[in-house]
Each structure stands twice: as C-alpha cells, then as structure tokens.
Length: 284
Image (spheres, rainbow, N blue to C red):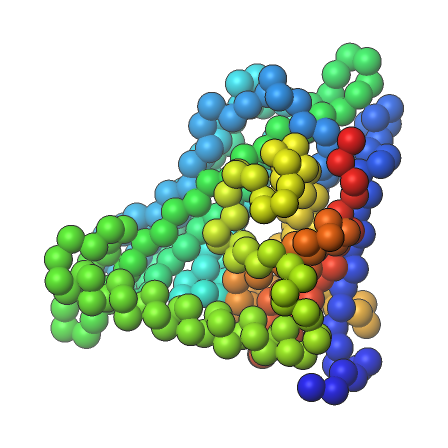
C-alpha cells in the first residue's frame, strides 16, 4: 500500500539507557520512568484478577506489594475485550510498598476479557542514585451473557458448552487481531522476518528471544515507559493531536532481531494503523 505523509502515523519515543539520571531526582509525577533494576527490591505480591460480579458485571482488581517502601509506586493496567481496549486502571503513591485498585465493569457483554498490569517502583538511595523494580501480572475471563439465560463465566472450560464458547470467542478475537496486525504490517511495509513478534498480552517476565535476562528486563521497563506516555495517556499522533486508546487493538510488539529497536503496532477504534518506534539501547 502506498504511504501518505498525511495518513502515515508514526510516533517515535526513543529512550536511551545510557543516561538514566543517576544523580538527579525527578519531580514526583504520575509517570513511569525506567531506571536500572535493583535485584534486592522484589514484588512479594503482583496480582491482576478478573471475576464475575453479580449478574452482568465483572470485578477487575489489581494488587501489588513490594518488599520495602519505595519513593514512588505505580501500577498501570489495561483491560481488553475480544482484543480491543475497553478500560484502563492506574494508581500511584509515594513512600509506600503496596497499592490496590479495583473497578466494576457494568453491563458486561459476551467476550473474552484479558487484563495485564505493569507494577513499578522507583527507589531513591541515600547516595542519590535511582533504581527500579518491576513486575507483570495478568488474568483472563470468558464472560457469557446470552439472551434469556443467566450470565456465567469461566477461566478454564469444564463443560462442553464452555469449551464451545472458549473456542468461538478465542477464534473471533484471534482472527480480528491477525487481520488488524497484518493490515498494519502491510501499511507500514514492515519486514516481519526481521522481528520477534509478541502480543502485549502475551508478554511475561521470561527472557525475550535473543536477549539476556538483564536485557529483557530493560526492554520491558522501557517498553512500558513508552506505552504509558504514548498509549495509556492517549495515542500521540505525528501531527501533535492525541486520541483515546479506547477501542484500539491489543498492541503487537515487534522486537528487531538486530537489537536496535522495537515497534508497537496497533489500530485505533476507527481503523487507523498506528506504529510507535522505540530505540533499544545496548545493555551494560
């Protein structure tokens, strides 16, 4: 497909790990900033939970506890329904080790609900250096609300009816996402063979293919820093306008095999392809 500068939406959020403000304490604000990982600061609890709440509602809850108080704690979560962003949760606080937030999704419709949360801590040492701790958690729920039937939900199908619904909803979601991602790949002429492709909802804390555990942690931290600023708070377009991410597709993370950059590919609620580009800095 021919590219057009007026339609081609590319947002660049190049993040460098070379200078990470070791000796400068930033102003306290609602923002995720990656700093070198402190291996002694660990999350003893990092949970994202989805469950049916009454007849037609879903209860979404996020809990996290660090093993010590942090200068700044923040949890940011996405909730997707059938592959499209339905809602967001975010909370931050100073001088605490624990956070809890919850939300009721009323009038829930039949869908595969998937939630993922980035748990983050910013730690300030007496020598002025700043470190991070981070974790991911996620959950999913199949919620079925048929006409003239009592709504029900499940995580793992146990009956033939539940297996049928799981297959149907998973297939519908996967087909829509494949179509959307392939459209974006063609639109931006992305050579897919040069990338490792990982849907955001499938990200975990394991090693990313081709990267060490340390490098993977740095990539994940920088990724969520960029996602928060350029997706969670609104998709920032090339012309400077900001649009809501609600209704956009689950981002596909494309990590360059040559370790130079990654791409975040999504589609807005009105069908516009979006690609965000982020530099991958060399690991120490």
